[in-house]
Length: 246
Length: 246
DNA sequence: ATGTCATTGTATCAATTTGTGACAATAATA
DNA sequence: TATTATTGTCACAAATTGATACAATGACAT
Image 1 (cartoon, each protein chain N blue to C red):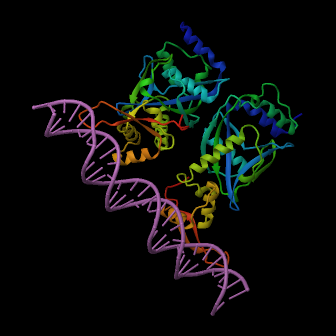
Image 2 (image 1 turned 135 degrees about the vertical axis):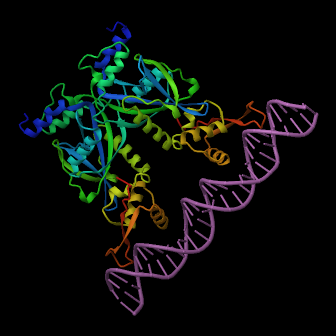
Image 3 (image 1 turned 180 degrees about the vertical axis):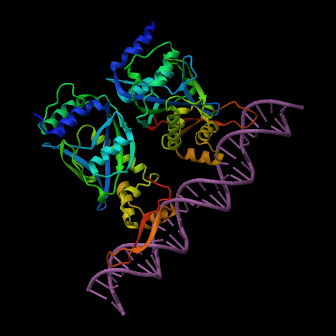
């Protein structure tokens, strides 16, 4: 039933993996003033999920998360942060897995490791949207960005996972210097403010925002200016990496 | 070599457990104006560790943490919070486990589950010191409170775990209403302030602290007063549980 | 070139929050 | 009844945050 050698490999790797543990990644990007989330769609189904994976026996948890992220985005050395562990006993998704597999023309043998209960470590990643190259995994036919406003509903308990990721993102917005990872190299104050407003879901007074972030001394003002519209040109900024942030 | 039936049971339960995953608990109490941590000392060794355990196949992660906590303190329904997952590949503690076991007159067979790599979910618990009854586990001869100022060094990576727990506790002090769980039913403003100062490791101006916490509207002032010393008697307070906290 | 336009950078003042110190009130003790 | 140490509260200063105003300035239209 499975002739594809990649699939075979995927299948038989389970003895190299730590049992019972998985990783799910909420990968955030920012584009067109919208916060985006990267989702997989399983082949021949309408099932969406957060990218995830497992941990190799000889791999650090952190490295496994980074690897999973790299596999879906082609990006290395990315800001990643644990946000929660999902460990309910209901996290045995055998029925859904059977459905997902049949979408790929596969049948899971009884006792297959995917049919077990998993405890999943949630990581969120913040990436520069323009640099990512979304790559579907072997069971999915698309890996795409979705506006957070209009996310489809997700399988497993991934709705809850995404929700928790978002709440953590919001509450970390100041201390974790989130802009640094979601914005491109250079950006205007306006773009930075839009990111804040989008994550927090509320408007911020322009002049106060400027005062606040300049007061943090994390920005370097570039003397160049941008060619925008019929109005005063804004400065460009970049983050001033003096030992801070990723 | 092992004749003790409890030990036998402990031994053979491993097939009921989720493999590769453990839980470690940093259990905090507050007494004599000191923040305390509950530690186990392994039998016939000088090895100290945070209380920990494993997750039953049919048990929620959260419930497992609560059970482990209850086993060491006899307390149910306690404030518990995840703070981090420790997942380095170096977390295979076979050598130390062999040493620990020989303290209990035991020898681990090759392939015993304890000799594998574990990923550990860290929980911290806040408890009312006066209500806890520390209970050693089957491999330890003491379960005792230690001043955080003078904690002995811990085995495995438990020093790092305790450290992370403390940092999380500090940064959560305001939003998580930590006093509610560490203080007895009723307490004076001074005791509350001492708790804050101890956790944060810094002095707070008395009048500001009072203004701040009263402004939170989480305290109920009890009209009674305490019999203290030769000075004005302070009010007693209790937490005003209007849907907040635990 | 010149004037118009929309947006930007900064200044200003009000409102709120936080830091510091002072002081009267008061249980227990002498 | 006076003394003492601590408590609850207030009053003011300093700092932070919120709201608004306004001059500066690229691009475009004329």
